[in-house]
Amino acid sequence: MKTFRAVRIREPGDVDVLELGEVSLREPGAGEVRVRVAAAGLNRADLLQRAGAYPAPPGVLPDVPGLEYAGVVEALGDEVRGVAVGDRVMGLVGGGAMAEALVVHHRELMAVPEGMALSDAAAIPEAFATAWDALVQAESRMGDVVLVHAATSGVGTAATQLARAMGARVIGTGRSAAKLARCAQWGLDDAVVALGGRFADEVMARTGGAGVNVVIDLVGGPYLAESLRCVAPRARVVVLATMGGGVATLPLGLALSRRVTLKGTVLRSRPIEEKIALARGFAGAVLPGFARGALRPVVDMVLPMERVREAHERMARDENVGKIVLAW
Image (cartoon, rainbow, N blue to C red; front, side):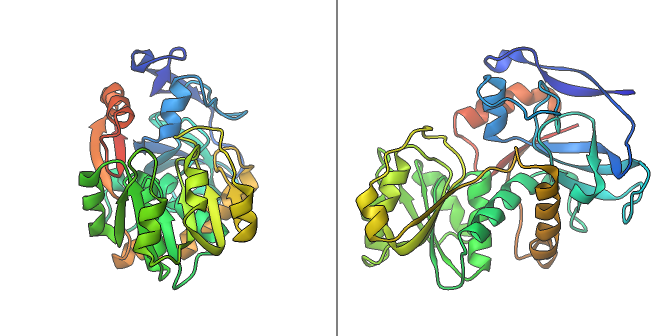
């Protein structure tokens, strides 16, 4: 066992329960590697975990947050192929990314795009893999009109870029006109300020009454019913988060008459086999877009890990556009 620094959640609560401590990690086993973490992206799930509302899945450190990381491979277990000490890598984990090191299966690793800073790479895995997985589940294709809720978030900025790369037109919602205005630089076609959670009438106006083909919903709660008011026939709605509430009213008449497909999805609790499949598919389909310059992580700011409380406060106030990254 080796000891590394880590962000620890002392107990469920406000930001004052976050502190720097230590964590002990075992040596990598068969098929595993140890990664020296350079930076980790902050996600809403970390805020929920800190508050005691989103516990880590079984087998994951329960009090070390962090779902995505970028770093350098520093140790190999047996039966590792295609990975070498010194490789720059990034990836998704069920928790524990806000530690100086992680032990992960080598098939879950993704290569950091050449020339990209590790602090930028740490903003890729959760945002882009989540968005890509949702767009694939929604069967998004060229010519679709895609509605992205919380378009200024990390996943929202990623979904915008990916949907545009797929040949779709993208409409984004948010609560701040100033923040939404910045989204045009990474491809948002239309921005709708969701005043009081209302946006359907404006979305219908922007689409000439035709409605949208795909909804990527990072808000949940009352947004679900409002979304169904502005979808086209045979629309596909994918709900990824419940920032706006975990309970929604489903207007069945609209869902039935417009033959809507509704899906819910989450990455954190998936079994390792599915996470490996996602990493391999993402590496082949999406990573080349960063090398070409067609995609880029949107980083709101990079803070030292010691300022994790400040990072949580900034996200809780909804001040960020894109990802907040914490670096060692």
